[in-house]
Amino acid sequence: MQFQTVRDAIENTLNTDAAGRYQVIGHQVQGSSAEERAVPTVAVFYGSGEFPQSGGSIADANKHDATFRLEFTATAPSKGDLATLQNDAATPAELAAALATFQNAAWEVDRVVDQLFSDVYGVIMSALNETFGLAIGAVSSRWIGQISKDNPVPKGEVVMLTGSAVLTCTMEEQVLGEVGTPANEFDTVVDIDGDDVEQTGVRVDN
Image 1 (cartoon, rainbow, N blue to C red):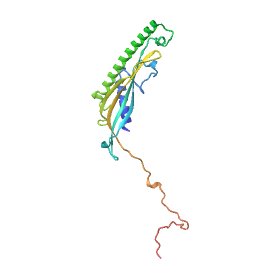
Image 2: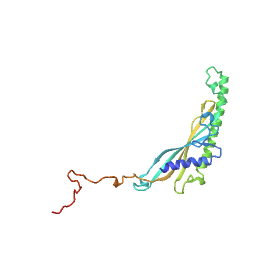
Image 3: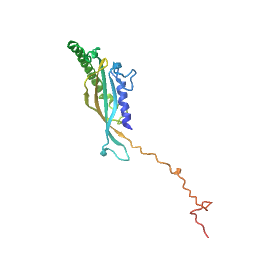
Image 4: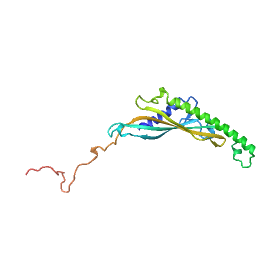
């Protein structure tokens, strides 16, 4: 369906304009574990769609108001003090120092995600990318209407932060229908016992 074509076009557009600022999941070369994510990542998912009855018919193209999720992940080093935070025997002074390094890493990764939002928003909403490289009219009304961030989470020796954006756009889905079985697949000859020359239904004049 067209929404799959548009999903891949969004992904390709983000990848083409990444310029080293981020990696698009499905296009990255390096591994994807938290410890290896030196560059923030973006993933594109089809989330939902609406097919307003007023915008289509059973015999023609149908209007599809689609919603895509852009999911973001970034990490920052936690200076190796996560072990101290998880150590029940750590002194108050040690815990305070370890917490400070975590807060610094959380602040740093928060700024990375903010910049990632800014970069991706600029790519998606650029006039040059109005149709994501597809033909004019293939997709319209693209709009990023919501952005959100989660809380930073310690993971191994890094602090991870995730977030997402909601991208909506409109396209047409063609109704291709089903391919029927050709009539010549059926044998219409009726073989009746005693009618060896298959003359059933043939008029015989006396």
